[in-house]
Image (cartoon, rainbow, N blue to C red):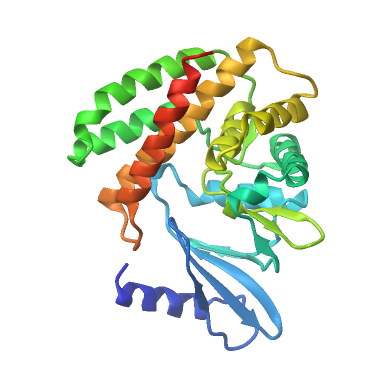
Length: 296
């Protein structure tokens, strides 16, 4: 993003009608989808996300807003204090953002599972208005088309990747439907010292519960033992062979979707981030996961 565009966004955030006095938005580094700011207003701190709809990635702000409000109602996310097109303002959570190693801690795994369960059931009960569905295999097909249209550097890989995605979708089979977060990166968990918070509802939508479980496992490189604890903890009993195969297929799909997301971002994103390296890292992880999947 150009300096002029950033300056314009900072000016817009500073001028929001929700502030009680003059403010100076402080940009936060690390976001790879939106521009994020911390704003202090008369002794209170707030988090501001600035970003318009991103149809290429299925990000629609009306859906994000509805999910953030529902999640706040059930105590998963901080309260929404202001919103307008392209802007979401929430209370600021003073805490430590998780790293993948934090989610691999068995104690934190149980804490994160509680948030996932509540997302799947409690948030779903509070959602209002139109709601998107996040079906990872549709996302994959759409990304493939976008990459072909954009003459991606990865064109030669796409036919093989799509064939494997079709095989994974067949392995998942019939699904239950819950309301999923669908982006369970470690950075979307914040530990305030007293509790965990779940943030960032860009990709929220109806989905199979297996996707969030596979997403948190694949994003954070869970060991086999942790995968067993994750599934047993969520379902309340050891999983059978069929469910484990479907879960492994979803793990592959999660990594493939992250790879293709990055490949599309290589072409279309204006944020400063090494998307090529991120694409290759996730593609290598997908290849390893797909090898494991074939043993089930």
